[in-house]
Length: 189
View 1 (cartoon, rainbow, N blue to C red):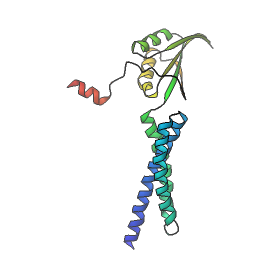
View 2 (cartoon, helix red, strand yellow):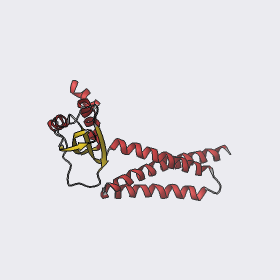
View 3 (cartoon, rainbow, N blue to C red):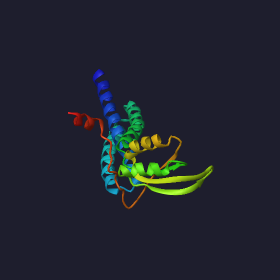
């Protein structure tokens, strides 16, 4: 009897982990599909469905005798959604449009970012309280990690909006890219 329960738990663990994998892949696949990255979406879909068929057939063939597998299946699905979102955030595949609206520091911010190699387009407009500058920046989402702190240090009262881009002709990558922790450590030696 104990051997039987161990078998159910091991099968359940397999189902749980496999569902985390296939749902995570599915979450990332959905995001890259929306972004129009067809080759990546195709490859991810192949892995996703292969894992799903394996897991679904395992659960369906044993569901009558081992209802506990349904719980593992459901928790694996729910966990996979969370893991997929976290992985996609770390990968930061997307291209974004960063719109910065500032009353006083538009030229200063634009010059600062351009000096770091980041293309910036600046527009002059009228806000609720008078003249404003709108900075239009197309960048990789991972570049927001260094851009936002730098522009906030110039104007802490600025307003910004981040929009996801579906398609564009090209992204000019900035010359500046802050060193990661491991590269900073290597440079000190």
